[in-house]
Length: 587
Ligand code: ARG
Image 1: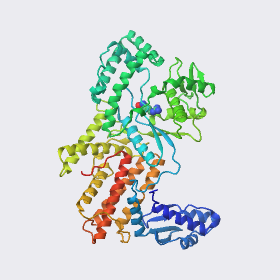
Image 2: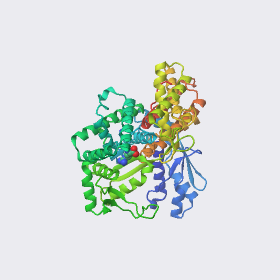
Image 3: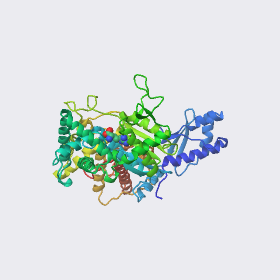
Image 4: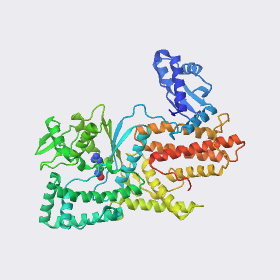
């Protein structure tokens, strides 16, 4: 095992030991350790313990201090204020610890796996067939992708499910139209680009809609098609498949632009649960979880009422026998729990669907499909707003096409890259522009906590100063350039050297990567990782201002500083990868 115990964990262990030695009757007490500005760490746990033991906190603190094992790791412990402990780490321990991370040949920087990994099914990146993708789909894809990387990094096995909207009444209309205009989607899949695929679908959709609204007889034929589709009529299914295939061409082109790997096998849309729907309803009805109400199969909840005070049910089956979104989601739960055998079902879905999921999860709990051992969580995300603070729309009031946004981000980023570029070719500018632009969009999305709305502001996103991915990418590229310029000098750790204040701060923060990743994964909170990385880059900037690297005093000093540069770069690289963002070697 190449995993490395972090300094904060080592200090924690030593303090916990001193605490229980000082107060044996208390059992194991938490020293409540955190990073501090005054010393390297501060422990606040003595206050609570003293209260519990009815002891004087400062006296207790003094006793604890006398029992702390200091030396290799802890340089100094002082009592401060009402009974806090200020702890200073030795310079050697900081360097040694980082050296151990650096030596981890698995590339994980010594980050351990979670103690009890399980299986998570993550439901994310779920656009709808025959429809344009919009910014909401962007959020689900970006957040879901990062959470997937984070979970896998901690050792969780993650099963991806892209629950695309590929079923429902609108397909009756589309299929009927295609049947009557058979050459509209006649081409081989590899002959069309994503853009063309979308415009084909868009044209078809509009034409079908027009006919549907104008022609009663077509309407009737379209409705009959829905029945054929749900009954599995082969010819109808074959035409439906054409819409799905055409849409996938489009989806994949957008995911590719997003620099995101989505696998076909993981796309299991609403249609994928069609065979389970009747059984799901039967199980719910037989167990009494769902009841018939005005012909529909419904689940009622005490705490969910409409504006008129009447209960709002979850409708599992409509009175005409049709199944909707809820039936599909409940069937998906059964599949994920009983076939995939997941412990956690995670849904990265817009907060506007929270009521739906609340009702679906509660229904599944009543049915016994979810319980103590299998939990379901909606990672609900907020709305993307325009600069004016209102939901993001075009000037004409239409939803903004995701591809247009991404293209604009790439254009802006390319302009920034071009301006700063010194020795980059046109081709390189285009490639970096894409990596910077897509990175900017992802980072802006990930750096606010998911449940909050955020403003889509491209000027801010591609700014070189501030909490942006470009800032982090430049920090990384600058380090690479220093490493290239170092010539013969190599990064080598020298634990015998004293460290500058800025080196200590950088080193201690680099050591906290493991704890940050664990926390971000456990809480499904990529924004904790972005905040960490931003601080890492800022501390690096201070270090670089204060401590000459290639012009340092001695060859050992040069090597040690190159080593600090390199471990910072590796941490940035790994951290950004967990966010789905590239770190180009040159910018
Ligand atoms: N396709 C839906 C939409 O675009 C999102 C699906 C979310 N996942 C689910 N299991 N219901 O809003």
